Length: 441
Image 1 (tube, rainbow, N blue to C red):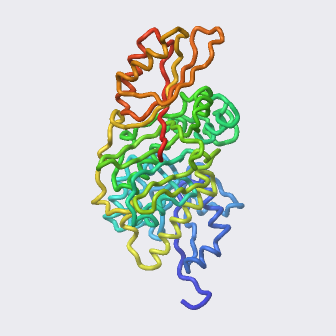
Image 2 (cartoon, one colour; image 1 turned 90 degrees about the vertical axis):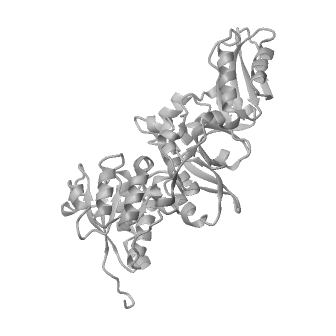
Image 3 (tube, rainbow, N blue to C red; image 1 turned 90 degrees about the horizontal axis):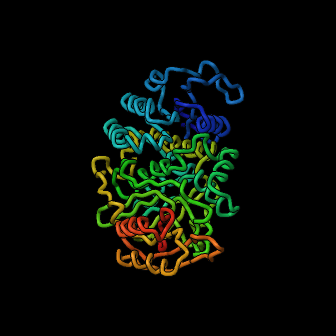
């Protein structure tokens, strides 16, 4: 190739031209010359499948580029890379498998589909000798997939902690910094476009659980299904909990946590109290962050915009560029998309939540009577839970008062048993609340 000349284009099929897909088109148009110089070949959008898409002169989407027949598009002989941004389980899964079988490489941001069907998809890619890029599936524009697969591949990881859902982080930030209740903070996030009209997937913790499945695969070489991840959302976190946690020196975050413990994996998503001075406690608004504890390197943090049109589109383009380079070099696709040979990825042995050991924040609405605090402490003690500190609020003429406790570390089965016993007594007037604490990340 002589100076100034380019090889034949790398031709792309785009499935879905919504928010992220539109961002991909924008970047392909905006940065066309830069991509061509980096690759030595241009990237060319050869077709876009979207049921509702109309020609758009500003995006350069002409009528001849648009099709409703995604199944035909992904097997066209002139297509090199299929970019799946439909989302959801089907037809995304079937189209990706069809594309791989026809010799195409694939880029996707579909964390829900990969979390549920990753073994099938990555297995098919390995058999076909094709690549599957999925950087946009976790934490938007933060290159955490590539970092775990490549940059940190020489180390052994002990734990991964992620703030990986911008909606929840925005809501908890509003509650923490502005004193809002959950429903008001959610409404504010919806008005700002940070929460969907139906936010269940986000606020229920399910989106974070999907992402945790992929992080655990990369960090520990195990395949998790979403059903194996203990998942608890933020809907029960109250402004009182946020305020009392602050008095105890903690900030409230929704964490996705994966730890390896003698071959077993802790996999859990739930509200978590972090020491106020910890770096993760200061990741606010819609930002994401992943904190990795490794054997040789120690702890590292990766933070940035976890969602949004152009951050996510940037992650998609990074995968396209990497795969295009491999194709230009004559490679047969990335065989180890998860950083391990697919045949060596093992099924996870998940540690039951009953065996997980944490410190805990507890909130009781206790009868304002002599001996009640001692009786609660006695039940906790009989179940192997020792108290580290107590906040007991003034009477104010009320029959019940909040009693806040922070415990030392104990297995969760002990806590559940103790709280069930306390709830059945006349000492308290409501179901006790608790939030897990991660004190020593």
